Length: 268
Length: 354
Image 1 (cartoon, chains in turn cyan, yellow):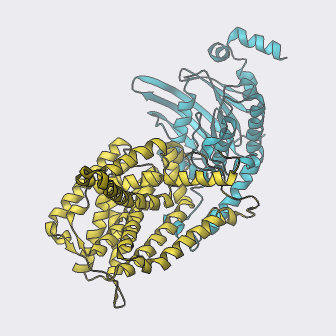
Image 2: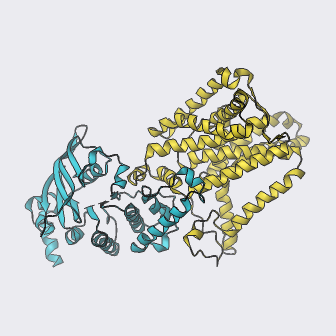
Image 3: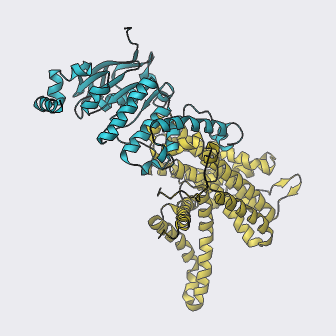
């Protein structure tokens, strides 16, 4: 087996908010075309880590390299153009826009028409481009099975559907790497299964690298290729999912020693 | 925004993306808009001077309101300086026309471009602040510009004001209200088409995205600073254009006309008409201009029975606008346009609507 290329390389990242150390000396890497999960208890710094990658936070120390480029030098809105998409833990859709328009915003960096050519819709190619983009995102709509709500305002949808629309919007960026912050939080079993299927398909068919934060250990173990565990802003384990869940430190910090053993027996 | 059922009648299917992206959602909307436009154009010569002048002012205010609606309704920012930008357009056009002999028809859009530049400069704070703080920052632009109009003699004629000639087309001077009305109508139609198109293309979507969730808009690749300032620019363009039309209509531009009161009137227009709606801006402008006159006639009638009311006419006029804003905020915060959509939905669902 050839050594996989590193898509994302996080080295010695530390992030402080005043006196609070949110992240301490975190290093990990994500290989190309891999599903990588960040797990850990609440407040461990998982979302802070994701925010460092997507640019919302700027770590005081360390470096983040993506695809050979120094990511910390890039502005937030640049990240779409270099192929990083993300979804949010708390829904962050454009509530008053239709589902279609929400997804089209994801194509912002791919479209060329601006406010001038937009105003003269019919001349200058805006119409052509808009219609091509529309045809393009219909594939994403089909893939995520949200055809029936495509004209609804995003704010009026149910929770599970909104999560899917958010994923659709992130896919519309045409990313090489996608950051998913708790894509399955608050979903029922059926919705989780659907979402897991979409993530696997994203990874296998579209070849998108996935970095995911998730609390459902069943899903994490089943679909991720590698896992890193954070606790109190420090990385306590990294490796294959089946190894990580056997790690004593991880059990103590996150999974729970007795409960987990019990669950496992019951699950078998 | 409250959800209103799809207005298309049964059996009207869209079978292509072109169909789905049409400017008008239904055939009815299309024919109604064209019908009203044609009707107004044909009827104007028979309306008499009073109503034509009313239509001109409504049209001018509607253009300015459409501009403000891009800033407030679409991008979710706020400006208390729109009246001053309106004034800047008026002075700039008069200045270009008198000092540089620019033909008035050209000086009007040129003045709008100048106002765009000024608006973008005053919009720079919007890159960093929002909400109440932005309101105060734009209030500063109102006062700075007002002061500038009063002092910059070279530009505005200072306290004496500036003369603004009526435009002419190849020697034909638009010196009647009727001919000027068609000019205003031309710019209004162009503004409506331009803004409607903007809202269905990339940058229009980006503006709405900035309003609805700026954090995720940024992650989607939208440059927040650029679009916040751009929306100030676009909104000032229409303010400047409307101001220029206004100045050349009155043929005289004076400082007193562009106070904070005008800015607040513009805000009232878009709140009453419907935030984020192009047609709402027109309805709001008409409402704000016609309501005081309606109240005046009502008070006159009532004054027959209660003579004391005769002296209170002026107050009733002023109060009616304030009362209308409060009532709309309570009962129809989404404006006249939303009310109209609901009425249509109820027709469509009849007899199952309540």
